[in-house]
Length: 354
Ligand SMILES: [Zn+2]
Image 1 (tube, rainbow, N blue to C red):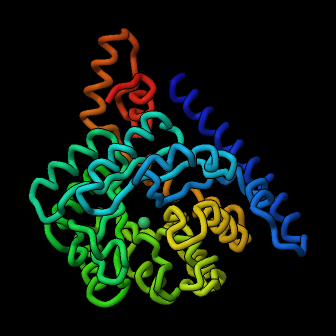
Image 2: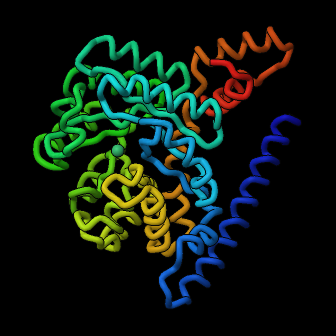
């Protein structure tokens, strides 16, 4: 009973803290809206820092760039980063390891994903299981179809469509782990999207994230997909719509659809792909938050939606086994029942295990 009350007390406390930080964002945002000048990035960071912004799509594990970005993320209010490296090709095996290393060193800031498996090979199922057991939080970026992108269309392990190879079995496997899959699909129309829709229907328990859903689509196309498929989430590459001429520089046209599906959007930088810098891509995420003009709703898109997907994943057998070993070695006790993957991963990272 006492344990229950303590837990309840903690929940009430964090709820109160969340509300007071939201009120402070609301009052700062109202002030910023009064100014006629375009807000600077520093002003936007100061205003929206408490929303806990997460970058949902970042390739900085392709080399050691992530190490030099840690300071920028901190000063620019990017609280967490979904980190991976190369996409669906053999070199991703190494860059997945980079993402893991980054996570082990910064378990509060980094959310490691992986992409280094050949989805045409049945061993891919073992690899996916092994990585999820180890403590990775999701698959991505996976090339589920690509004929247009100058980079992704050339990768060795790309799928011809979102049902190619062992992808259907992978979708079922990852549903057991409650782990999402972040898909690159281009062109975002025609057969690739028809196959994606079939996958969404045939694997209703799997969480699909459509990578850079705003790239070369219209708000109407995005609306249609999200209306039809409740297990589809939308990664919004803000820099593309805000700063890339190819994106039309009319981000406001996407605001109604983001608001309509406020429980399923997330924001990303895609490491600033096609832009002058990654920092500009961070700046663009704040421009979208500012355009939303509703801090409570913006918090969902900036933080809550992705955070909920990460937090819902239970600790794996591999993690629990390591924790039991740790208990034996140290005499410490951990609350192994009901432990999440996030909590288990943090303990293991701090104890340099796994
Ligand atoms: Zn990407």
